[in-house]
Image 1 (cartoon, rainbow, N blue to C red):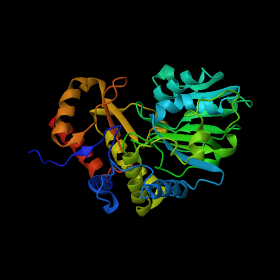
Image 2: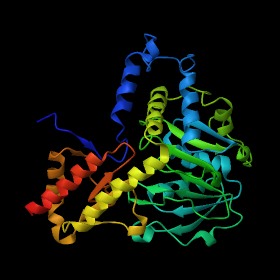
Image 3: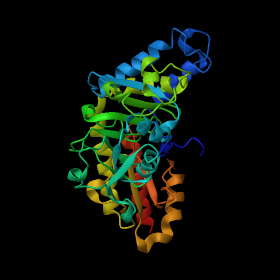
Image 4: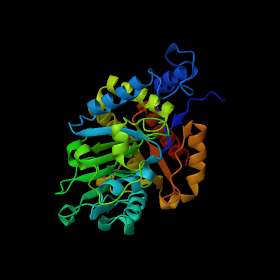
Length: 360
């Protein structure tokens, strides 16, 4: 039965709305009636500049970005930003919350550019909670506090702005555009697009313009954010197709109620799935309740049912669940519920969990 409905719970690259995929596919065949594919047009073509302009405008509108910030689209993923952020913003000292694998990788890169202070960490507990109660420990003389707002691997998230006395820089790769954000509290926000806003290949960076150019080092041209702000992300060839897919996705988000509605849908999906994890005798969650991510819902078999892990995975896969295997450092299962995940998909997974429990 090859045409069974598939439910995409992949952690990234991840689910996109069907209409976004279809609309992008149409443009790949013929961009704006030009007779050329979106894959082969020049990024300097007059028809492509409006795509970038509308993307920037929708970003500013949906996130309610204040005056004095620029939105740029680069390659290299969030992993390049682990280096590019401190290159541009670390003057003397950066503070970090070590909340998971990606924060730890960013911290390592920042050490190449100046002093780094780890303010709080949940590493000793295998990152099973988002650190808390550290706000007063952030050094007042830090240039910024780096936070990773959602930890895909461990399933922890902080869905609000921290109350700290220094500006923040956030890696929001996996929860950007899933909730309203007070951008004014940040010097920069960056996100690989392949979780919530597009396909892989483009990274979005929101930068505060008057914070650029202060770092005490010569920056290579491509690493200096000013290069890309001044050229409107067109200093070199940008990732054309992922930017177009992002445009379609931002239009879809706006049409479906913006970020307040996205936040509501995220809570609804997570509440249903976590309720089943807590009810079902076979499963248990892996993180502390007040740190539970709405984006990446992680769970494992209860100890006495460990031998049922592979049978459940096979059972769920037969039901059309895709990408629910947990990250190797945690094991078990991970259901990623990004913006495009439907309640139908969540309910299908919950039903599979109930039916599997009934069989065992």
